[in-house]
Length: 337
Image (cartoon, rainbow, N blue to C red; front, side, top):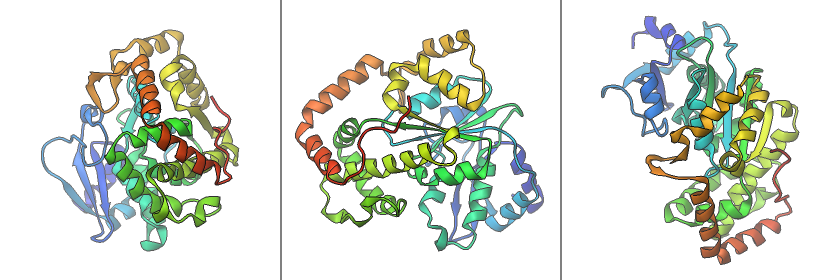
């Protein structure tokens, strides 16, 4: 992209900022459309962009172009979550609303969350430009809805500070359900372990700071990650920006969407008419598996799967629960829906 064209980046989501390369000092963009945004399961390496060409721009040039742009007054809603708690289902409801532009797990935000600010000279500017690029819309009256990846929970406070129009829904399920959702596969167990070093650095005031990560069993490692996110969730729900944070038991997104959706709409100061909510609840897309729309996944099948997992992994689940209780951090969910 030519330097003189960079200001146009901030007027449309047509070029999606796939990732930052801090070592080379470049941003990678890919061409997109409203359809490819919706069709992309997640906006990471699985992004379904137009064509096969990736465009590079010097990060310094993009930062300079961003500094000349006026601040956005567009509302932004973030769906933060502990993973495996119906966050993709909630994002799918928003995708069915014409006045919402939805981004599912943008890699750029995950990169910023996992890059220590002290490791790069312009992290704050990169964060600012990242938010600006991720909050462009196709229509001026659209609300941006971003469902980040779990590591981005560490950015929650910064996201609320960055824009006074931003709001957060924090989805969290009971620890026992989270444990079995992780223990069900080798890939999820390995993912949790890969998250521990960074997660342990995000909560310096938490009692978990002195835990020896290498000594943890798989259920203890999963419990550790849940406790970190429970700590973040608790801080958000009781902090200075608590009026812009809504904590929801993720199960209620599946079991009681008719109550969850109006509550989120109220916090975002948007209006959902009764007939609009009915349309969302009856749409066939919400009865599909979050990662694969070709698979059916209903409330009943979800409940049955959780019950089967609870029975199958009961010994490991119980050991993870016992370890978590020994850490002196509340295990009940923060007050919310």
